[in-house]
View (cartoon, one colour):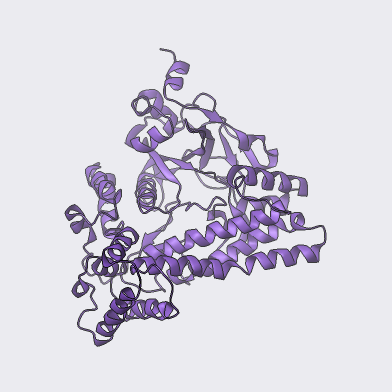
Length: 491
């Protein structure tokens, strides 16, 4: 069998529509081969859904593709240009350690970016080596697949390979490459790049491409570019509300890390909250808490304002009118976000309809959880299971009063108690990727070459709403520590 035939058997079915955009938006790249790649993990269900042959992907040729040693048939490797506000400071960026191989067209006709992360230097690497360490790549694999299991829009992880080479960060670490699958890698920062360094014609081409790729089923109305802004706002309010509802903290909500598609992207110093506290921050570099859990909704609004600014030349020929259209669209953000969040919180409490007192019912519970440092996930899990004594709030007079009010609220709706419990079961995960469990899996993999711990974790995270016996150990809290848990970008 020839090499080309082997690639065909793998099921790659690439298109390269991004490469047909203006050339300023990307840089075609040669590969940066590594010495001796080995497959660590392959996401076989994802591979199958993409129309790929999992067996062939595990062959030598398949591993060579995942390592960035070989270009699969039909691919056109490129690094995308983008800019971004990083912690509020604007800068030129781009794929400094990633390659977009192309867009896989699935048997159902869906289109997904296939990107290699950690594949070496590009035109945008600046002083970086373009490589990635095994730990952060496995971390992205675990968290992104956990998010998928939770039903939250996300990029996904197809494979991780080790490179056989070491990279130097604070210490010498094993190198690795992650293969990421995304609806696209179009970012707010992509538009910022064109807005600052491109032409209006290039901006229009990017906006038209974005609409066709992600929003063509939506109503363009009389102003497609205004509709684009409105649709992006809508998707981001839905996404961030879902983050808040499960206690997810992205950690680095820079504008270049906000995907236009509405997917969660770029898992660096992310983590899930244990004890409920809106001020929770895990990222070692977020010293001022800009991206704390409680700040994520307003940061989303700030990022979308930056996106709206890029579209001003397209919204209207008159600048004043253009600004007004953008401001009117952005003014809907809070209503959309809180609508999504309140609907999600009602579901977490088994409430189907709306009453005026619901807001105070929800906020009172969260206030008690903060006061007593109750675990966010396990509190709702205990309420779902009908075990208020396991919430960590039991015995508190305020909670006992709240619990009675909640039960009375459920009794006022037409739906049965069984229906409420089913709604709660589908809205409250029994498990999340607990930080200590993720670290346990990464330590076993990186330090001992033992991937079984990670594989078991991934298995239980694939069904987070099951409330199964097997999940009990994974819902346990970590032992207390004198030092707060901290995450790192892993660049």
